[in-house]
Image 1 (cartoon, rainbow, N blue to C red):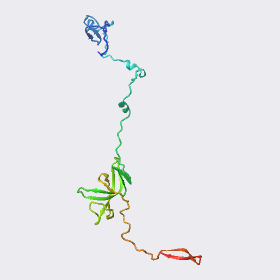
Image 2: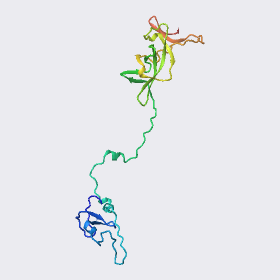
Image 3: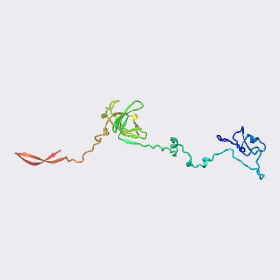
Image 4: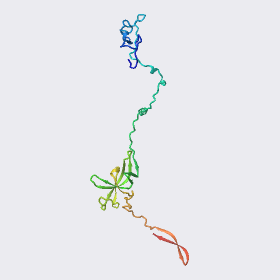
Length: 236
């Protein structure tokens, strides 16, 4: 029997009894009607006037059909606000797009409080503790803000001091294609990007024309207080 509902006898309609029983038809009867001889609530089946037993079968579970027949507009709406879980469940979950590698190149960059530019000289320390110098050729930054630099090695000459950098004693070396992270580079000094390029050709060409360069001009000459114009030729 559902909780919260007060039972009543189907025969005498009483609501108080020492024990509730159920008849063979499934009706709820009190203890007095159940033990009374010849009662319809007992174990015998009820017989109609025609002589045929009446089959009255009621469900053991009493269902409340009031909520089903009541329209949705008449139901009381909850005055509570909707939580975040309800709001987020309104939309179908979407999978985050895959990360795409994007690289941004630049001519200058700020790293750990030092402003680097193209042409700056940096030092690189290898695993054996040897110090090498290079010139920055460009900067790169990926989508995770990891900063890198592309360098050109500087080769020392016989006059280069060991462990120190003298720009006048270094020449340009090979160019690296793969970038190096800025955490492995240490700033040395600023320098123009064309500083280590050769200013004169190692194999100069001979002049084809033997004519000397000349220019013509008019110079005023003062003779006896009068000025006359005379054409002069200046050979350079």
